[in-house]
Length: 285
Length: 296
Picture 1 (tube, rainbow over the protein chains, first blue to last red):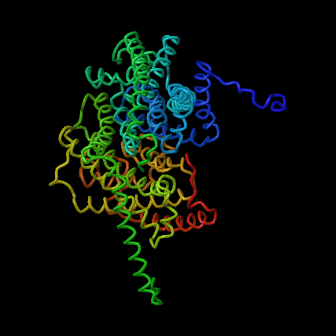
Picture 2: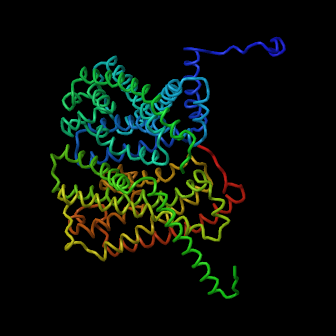
């Protein structure tokens, strides 16, 4: 056996530096992906509930005689809700849940980077949620016979990746804000659902909210990301788009840098405040 | 505890216990719902969500119809969506109490050993959500009347029909919530989705935001089985009068027939709630599920 071959006091090889960072990322991403495989009913309910919401909005459009492309807008928006819900409940409020379940103190005590933990949460969330969003997109498209005309696949992939990077950067940033909250975290995450569906134009082209409202809503990466994806997926998307795709790609890239840098700074800052005010171990039920 | 040999006294004791459980649970539910923040933020929270939900539909409608808010379809959609707030609030409010007490506060076992009536306690826990839901409905209606010309005129509202329909509907929703609460006794924490799933399915099938004729033919019969379909139709008729009667879905039914269907379905749900509670409660005790913590 290995233990017999190794001298009793021999040091255990430990990862340090970037290897420790990567191992932490993988370790935190692992339960996100595997947990989903072990609880398949979650996948079913997440897809089923989203399809219900998508169907309701599709039938509203059909009741008022909307062009068929709006059905496609709803299906794509419905698929992207999976990512927003993941950001709210499994990124932003995750450190609050970890505090409630007693894991947060262990994360902070362990000799690893909290940024690596947040990054692992994000990567695991992207993989797990990507499967759900894909299922919503496929099922919704099949049920409602959505036709896509992809102008440029590389551009579409680039927009999608940039959107997710900026979105999960926002999630990492807000996770540190949630660190300071107690019971209100649940309510505030709950509050950020419908208003964001409205402002980001999940079920209609965002330009219909007016230019300045759409500019303000662009702080949420899904607003411009979704708009750009619709422009690249539907023939009339460009005519109904808010800004041109290159401009929206630029906005997404800027948001990526901004949110990731802000996440790094805020995490350290909020952790210091939380330590000072003794909020890391509190459990205000 | 005094035990009486007289059936009427026994009934009075059970009724008194049920009333006490309901009253205390109502107070407790309100504290849980509202005391997480200051009243201002709570008011903003209670207003923003329903207004945003309504605004999504308003924008969708305005984009396609060039803001023809005077078309009868618009108040049909708007009122259906506004009153549907009660479905999620009451049904989920009652059923969520099981998961909240068992998994979050971990007090369900103490509640079970206390001298209270469990179904009455759950119904009481749902009252807070009913109150916040009523606030949301009022705000949504007010926004519709003030900014979108939803044709609601107090003088033209059929108040007796409205109040009777609303009461019957809320009772029916509470009983549906009780069925879900009983089922929740048997399932793990992650099935907090059960209330949302049922509410989502009913949103689609009950014609809350579009006439049932828009659904594929094979789905329509499900819509006619849902009690909420009849409830929303009654509410629309009471508030809008002739405008609501212009939609073909239930135009063959008189108000009296719709009320009869709603009352019948409410009685059916009362029986279902009683049977489901007895079955699930027994099974949960047998399998030791009352104090399970699934930690999801």
